[in-house]
Image (cartoon, rainbow, N blue to C red):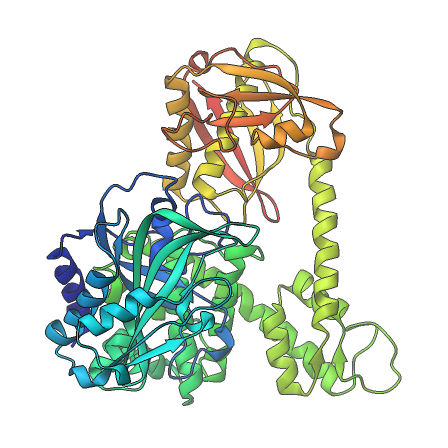
Length: 592
């Protein structure tokens, strides 16, 4: 069975069971700061499961693109991937529960995929001191005629899922195996885990299932690995064509990493040393490193990416839409890293020959060192863009160890200095207090809230400057904004202007402001009382961006001044988006 056929069969089967077919969400989670990237099919439905938003449909089926890099060092074996697709069927309004979910799982495997029942096995949650045994699922197995020899109780590590992040929906799982290989996880969301570790029963229970697409495809094809399926055949063939050496592990790493990088780029992530952008940089640079081990001397990343886009572009149209951008960013990063590799290898070669010292790493020349200090590793990272993981790989090859704790100590020190520097940049931003300056000042509050709504809570103000002609707003974000992100920000701001929202002010203590959900900047500068400006229908909310919930769009600690209603602002337009400094972007905008 081909990958195209398997996707279609899954969607069509659950569509026949009343599920709405929805597209994959972005790899960049929207309004969910608890996770860096999309790692599961249920993430886009997290608020539906938790009751924070009303589900648009009672049942949904998707094929979701996901990224997980916790086991990135294992990529290249028969099972591990950094990018993968997850098939999933979901119920949000408790219109079906464990019996239907388990029954349909068995039916799909037996009747649609023609897998003999004797090859299929099951596990369920055995219970522990935190949550009771999933007796209900066991009874379903018996009702469906599954013999005990096919059913195995398992502990929390294997058969209790979630939540994603520190809190959220979670519950016991039923896992389905084929020939001993786990292919399908049925999560029954019965609880909401709070930040303090308590499990509260959900008012509305939900079903969340996930099928490892690549793994199931390999099982159906009778092969040991997803790399032996049609998902990778063309990609690996292209890598072999470009290589002068043969190494299966390196070929698989290049194929996996550049497939993942292509999808991340298509969703607007750009390589840098921060957060998800660092994930992308790490993937590209590991691919380049292993490409060199395969004897590929010329730039090759965009050539592999082209094969990825050809293979997946019909399923995920964003790949073709952003093809030019993807190629440009890959070539830019590859060329940059090739220079870094040459520099890094020369440094390591000098160390290997005993040529370390003040010029290379500093320190005493008494005897040959076998450990690279944290400060030296951080210098490679900060000055030359050499990732810690790459330093570890090459160090191991050259017979050196790496002081990781020392590296992270230096990294934290650098972050603190960067924070202090950013604080010094923030000066309120007002050039004077005229009518246009007040309008622009109010517009920055709307812009700040809109950026958080589109990019997540990591988008924090890092400075501003306002004149009578324009506003300039600096904010923390690791990569260039995509055109659609800029449009989305503009639309959100203009929607609040069109509503002619009232701008309200309260004097509160800092603690009261926090409880009100106010955005605060550099709290150590605040006195006992602060002014809190809110834009929207209410000032009592702990969240500013819940559309249609009666909560304010923006709640922010500020000294003012502001207009009384947003309708006087006119039309908001972003004229420029650019880099301000490392990890900080700058927007310039006007009111027309």
